[in-house]
Length: 343
Image (cartoon, rainbow, N blue to C red; front, side, top):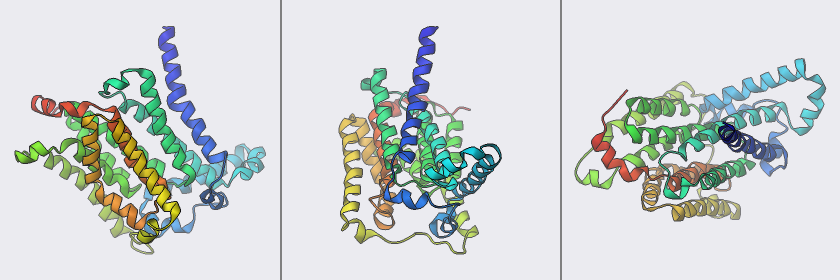
């Protein structure tokens, strides 16, 4: 009884409390050049509702209403703390922290669940599993030097998509595939990176041997996910036309000439390289296939993103960590041959 209680306490401290403390320190312990300006914003800036940001409906909605809620609570219930809070940043900044830390902690919970799904022999030791989880958490926290209102939400949906992909791999329950489509649909209202859920699914289920044998069972599943992405993507762009564009700017040359951007690129490449080196044969193949299917996203980073904002590499890095942990793909063929669709 006491052992079970200790295990639950340790899990609570490790999966929720420690990540929360790290995240809190990154927002209030030091400032980057990006944070200085954001801390002075009193409300969600107008540019969030124009340009490419206008399509990020869920983060924008939360930014507005959580800021209003924070102001209301402080004014009516915590007036004595108002001066102290404003010294640490605007109410908008505090609301961004609350939104991001909430989805960050949910991400930590599902990372813990993922690391328990058919782990490699290396992770049969609980302490090793915890260290890999901690590495993933540190990667998420360290890129918070560029705080946004959408990245943590998008990462949560992406990790949730990975979880349901691996669950679907395990037992082929149709409910998991439907859930995955729903996750893709909703997360497209957060950020376009929702398409990476499809890239991960394709990396797991598309096999060269199947292609040679012209076994295209996976086509219907991938088409379903593509549809779940394309419908909201096009719908948003039809509904939000005024003062909105598809990209903020083109930074291709700047990415390969600025020393800061080159450092950001090196960070992303080395992070994936070490995940690759730590992975077993099947994990390495998964990484190669994932990089192939996510090539459009990587090209978009190079063209319209900034390498210095390493948060853009985070989905790739987390995928590499998941590849280190999993051995389930070794038995895909056996399970596909023996499984039937279930509800």
